Length: 149
Image 1 (cartoon, rainbow, N blue to C red):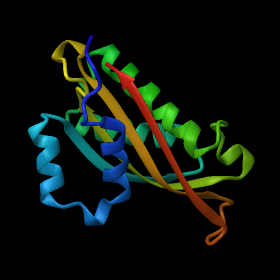
Image 2 (cartoon, rainbow, N blue to C red):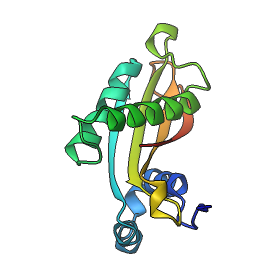
Image 3 (cartoon, rainbow, N blue to C red):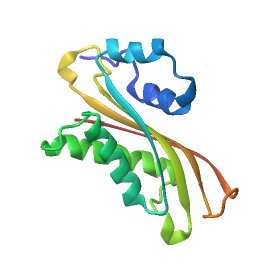
């Protein structure tokens, strides 16, 4: 049986998004030694589909997924939705209920298991704010989604 290694893909994605400005070369070198691909970005919107689109675009631009392979796009989509559920407390609604988000995100793709047969996984972490579309009336949020490819 393949066991989850000490290299946790979700924890790594959360560290990337939370330590955005303080990330050091040693940490990113560790990800590269694990042969994990990653990218980071920002998105703000009152519309959930724009958040999804920004993250999908970043994953494609940084070659974390192959757009021509449905299973890869599908895995990313579900990881994004899972993270959005955390950000929106289970109700993926924004503009329709007068909420807006400002988020940083990190995406990591790799194998977090000891056995290579477990294959690739993808993690999406989000950190930022949610609230009424009035500056200063928001609060912090975090979300994490992980899916197998």
